[in-house]
Image (cartoon, rainbow, N blue to C red):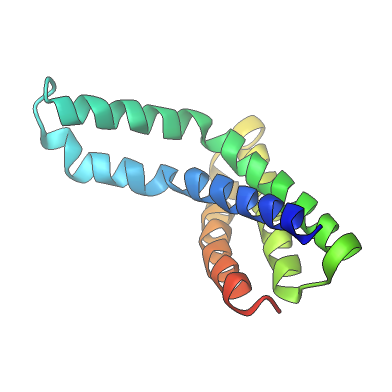
Length: 133
């Protein structure tokens, strides 16, 4: 039973990391890849990779929030309560909800909250994996 909960947790983490890759991938492109010639093979491959990350960022973010809540519910009802897990699920859900509103409602103002929450999630995920408290 605990293995299914782990799968849900890792699905949330994978979705989160793919979603968060949006920011560094854009920065890497702007800083280094854009300086390569337009017909350079690595630039074309990186642009394809970047296009996929940017296009599906919102869906992976929503997936991270959904998998985090599913993982939390599964762990509470079948295994045990983890306070760092509860905090992680709350932050992931908040980031997903903020991202939803940014994507479909208001653009600029919520981004200033969405990004720091996404960064805080990384610290909480690491804390959760290390301590499992």
